[in-house]
Every structure is written in structure tokens, then in C-alpha cells.
Length: 287
Image (cartoon, rainbow, N blue to C red; front, side):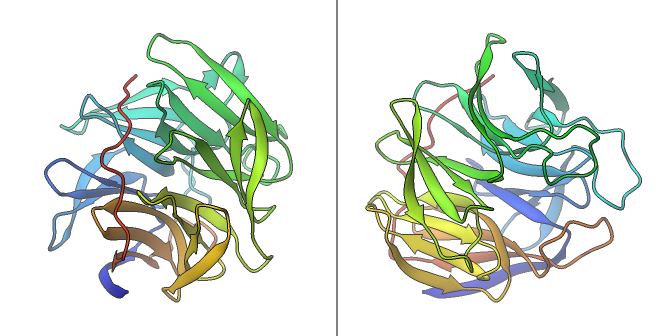
């Protein structure tokens, strides 16, 4: 596979999104902004504040963002954790800071489902000492009418990336448990159990059912079969955090260090030419 470095000296990049005009928009968790790659250079897109961790394109042309709150070491505690909507012109709006009476501590990654609702992981505050309250990881879903619910409570596993496959089935990664799980009949089942030297973060499904999973400490992207078997690993030499397909090109966000600190500028953006094809289209949805 052909691997190209597109940009470096970023903060903590996450959540790449391919826009209709071909630009690649991604989060920078250290600088509190969305950035865009226009094929030649990185440019500002929107100022979200805090630490944006994940992003997905809505059917309304807006980008929906999981906002993790203040960046460790930044001294800025003004940004509330929750779900943000970023319009094409750069306007940012906080949509949810709680769901069904539950405070969101660490919204991490998000995806629209076949039902048009927005599904997202909240990594909780069990391992996040910015918060006084200790809350487990959780899986949430919300809709455009103000409704929403906690689908699952996921203690001690750190739920992280989330994605739907071509059949419309929901998957999420559990970083501390080194596994990928799938929702079946409202219950979590293990799809892939990885070894301890793989820590799964964000992921993207190919049309043929393979999952391309950013696995941080293995320093690359792990390829998992439709049956949940580890097939291959794309070496980047850096902690991959998330990825997204555009045709056969897999865009990958990564960083040389695993911890978020405001002053760090070790983030990178990559393009990998794969033998796969991404989904025909994103599942539509908006809030």
C-alpha cells in the first residue's frame, strides 16, 4: 500500500471528514479547532474551543463534533463537553451537554445510523481527572427532535471509536479492553479481540466488510476481516487516532505521542492508497 505524509506539526488530530468539495476536514484536539486540507496545505475551518475529538458530516452540510472539553495543560476550562454543530460558514453551536438527564463527560466519536439518529461514544471520566465525578463510559443515541437515550453503560473499557458497516450494524472500540464490539439485539457482543499491544481508537469500514482500525500503540492501522480476524497492519510509525475513506484512499490522523497536551505539535495527517473501497455514501442524518 502506498503511504503518503500530507501534513505534520499538527496538535492532536482526530476525526477526518471528507467534504463534498473534496476538502478533508479534521479535528485538532490541542488547538480547539477544525482544520482543512485542501490538497496542498492545512487551513483553518472553524474554532470550536476545547478539545474536539470526532467529526461526522450531516445531510444538512454541517459537521457534527464530539467536544471533549478543555485541553489538559491549556488553562482554558470554558468549553463544555458535548455535541457541537459546525455550519459550513464556520458557526459553532453546542447542541447537547447532557442526554436524558445524564451529563456528557467525554464524548469521543460519532456516526449517523440507518435510523437517521446520531450515535456516539462517551468515554466517561473514570480515567479523566479533569472531572471530580467518576462516571463510566457509555453509548448514547440522540435525534433531531431533542430526544435521546443512554443505550449502554460500559464501565472500565473506555469506549472510543464508532462506525456502522455496510449492513447498517453498529460497532465501537473499547480501548482499555483491546477489542471491537457490535450491537446485536440491543446487547454488546465481541466482534474482534485484539492482543494487548493493539489499542483500538477510531475506525472505518470498507464496502467488503473489512474494518480499518486506528490502533495507537501499534503505530498504524489494523485491518480486520468481516469475520473479526486480524488480517494485516499498515505501519505508520505513529499513534493512529482515526481514519476515513474517500474511494480507495484512507485518510489517517496520527500523533507521535499518545497524551494530549496543549503545547504539543507532533500530529500528522496521512493518505494510504488501499485495495479497498469505502462506503458508497455516508448514512444520512442531521440534528
